[in-house]
Length: 175
Image 1 (spheres, rainbow, N blue to C red):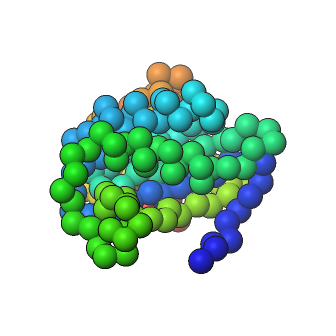
Image 2 (cartoon, rainbow, N blue to C red):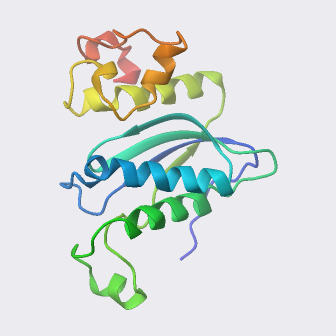
């Protein structure tokens, strides 16, 4: 089956990537393996990480691809494969995956959205950073360690108390 995906060379994209086992804590338990996989892929297939948050069972990211390049699917495949090689096997694997020699760590697909304009970009950056609060892991976005919000705070683009007390601090469309 062939999925139709957005394909704008040099485009900006928002992604959601999930583990197969949504009750897993694997992404934060093996955060160094994920970081290394991303570092290695970036060194071979450049991309700019505009925002990223890693939660226990899924992650969200906003990437800008280089001019003339729209192959985010390759990058995700390589990141997932690199991470998977660092994880001990033993996860449940369905017959279809076993037949193809696949691991059962990640959901096969991911969700992407091509960013349309500056307002869409800002909305998705905020969504990435508020996600740990939305899921109830923390009270204040800056308290989540696996987030680019810390880069935004260092650069003065966000304050440490941004969306700090509750989701009510955000406009209704961003909760």
